[in-house]
Image (tube, rainbow, N blue to C red):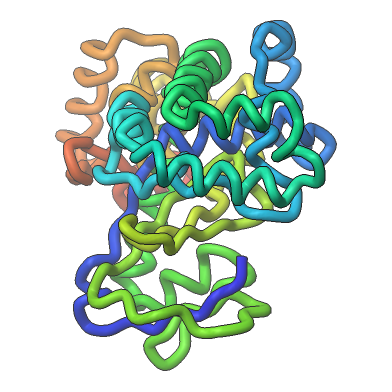
Length: 328
């Protein structure tokens, strides 16, 4: 990642966060190809080993050179705060065949011999068919490897966005950008990635999409190609405990006061979370979690706020004091 982007007033107004199932699918595929670099995800790799063995990912790996740029049409900027994989793949499938041919050829040229190999020639001979094939592969990867874990992944991504949204509210753009990634910095109205070689062109108020990812750790990536809105993908916070089998435990005093399920839910909210994510983590029905959250909120232990179409719950100062032992 290497760039310097100067923000105009319109750009500042159009900065937004988004969660992208397609980006997570791409990151998961990259993790499968280089498992030695992703120690945090070893539990997931062990779980999906058999399912991954049944997928032919060679076409996607062929277009993802180690030292180069994959086709831009495979990673359009997310259009909604939390879209679905189907929404994003509809955009991929709408790629113009001539543009797909140009980008596939450029990606293959970065791997010696790939453009003239059997698979590379087949891709270039039928770019429209290649786009459909790649979109279908993403669907298979998602269904087999990620969909069963999506509530857990989404909870981490939502918590990351909530954290950075608070930093933005507390200290503005500088406080936001300096916490996203060690290579990112903000100075004099410009976002800079360490090691930049040149300024990027004027974006005419397009703003920036910030996309947290659990699978792109420890690096960050960027896409500034038209017609997409400039995008930065960065590692989400909290992936160290992503695959942990057990969550925070409540004290005996909390359980006696609140009951086991309410105490467990309150203890689990170190970061903001949704009803769906909590239900998944605690193996409870959505209706039961909603009822517990309502009681905790009415007692002044939780607060709720809306982010897009989602409602996030987080502990109030009283709730924090209770879970950290400050009231016992």
